[in-house]
Image 1: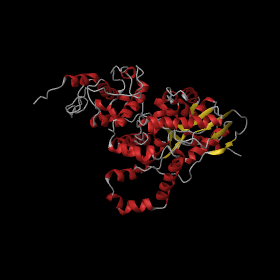
Image 2: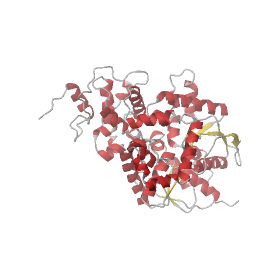
Image 3: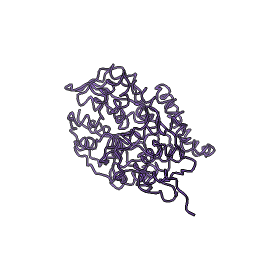
Image 4: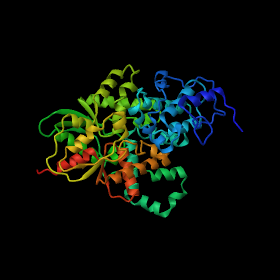
Length: 467
């Protein structure tokens, strides 16, 4: 029996080039009951026509998109998702659970932006679309629960976040986690909670904390910089943060870590919670402006990507538009900053084989790939070996691994396989989520390869120098 097709459905079918095989609907979307003659996307944060219609459906994004590479489904590609956005914008379909599932499977890695000849601002489109989904109360239960318990209740509040981190560290370091896992008691939890426990990030032995005092430059002074502490990184990778301070000092920088700074807001923005993201941006702008620094340095690629877009985020805010633009212009990833100084190279040999994993928001959003490699190549004795698909997403993507576990693990396995094939001793990265994802994947694979931030490797090389 051949199904009748509404003309408006045919438009969506042809907008991006085909029917999603296996579902029988254009792009895999069940249009029955979801056709809508309403206004589509509404409000000041709605995707604009100027952004939506820059996509010409050329398909160059397909081979760069991790979810398309894994599934070969048009619906899980950037152009397929944009076609669905257009259909809602034009009032041809309404926001449905099925549409939302395709948008939420997106990693927001922005690899598509790096290869798009039309300059489609896909990251902005996806954040605005998710904001519409959130305002429509159509988020998946997993994302909605995460938004309530973590993105709003914890991330904007430093004290709550630190308390939660300390409790997680106690649970992990005291042996309670190991005991519960061995006992099988966790199996009695609902599936969603059990899976979240399995994906719980590992807290470090010693947290990194902002301080009111300045960490002064060693040798000739070159700059005064502010270092973003952020939210999760100082609890998971405190050693990397301390290494960042030492490396900046070694390269002639006074380092300020303002105590009233907070989370950059990236995770909230990616989930479509734009207003809370703006509140977090304003807080950081105020904190670093009061500190009087020349540059704002971040050791987290995801944070740096969002902070460099504060000007765009707050462009309609009369009180913050100018300062947000200035803040964005003065934000640097630490590898970018060190490579441009230029870097003072280590003098002792660090005889290890290292392969570089490019964090998505460093390589694709900030378009920085050479700076971390330049730093690694400056270290005597270090052998840099490239892995295959170094810039393909590892599946971490912030909180993605908590709500899209299957796809996250598929990408994790692919990335770890490529890293092991490179035959290195260390995977170098520049983003805390990637580092945690890779470390977990390596442990699951039974490998003793370690994962280090680029500045941790540089700091270790400095430490080998004679006093």
